[in-house]
Image (tube, rainbow, N blue to C red; front, top):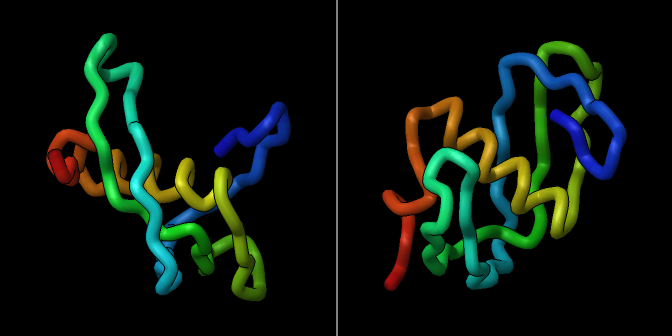
Length: 83
């Protein structure tokens, strides 16, 4: 994944969602011009096959990770919309 011009390689991700949630206006290049409100965790922990220890991310990176992992699971943001 690429965040702010920095690539963070991740393989076989497992994410652990934090308890604090926030509603965000979410969109995607897969559906240009479409957006929806979604509930996302402000904090996630990531375990993957490359890194030897669990890594923690906070918003906005945590929200991006959740969005991209949803893609890997075949889920679009409109499937999780709360409107």
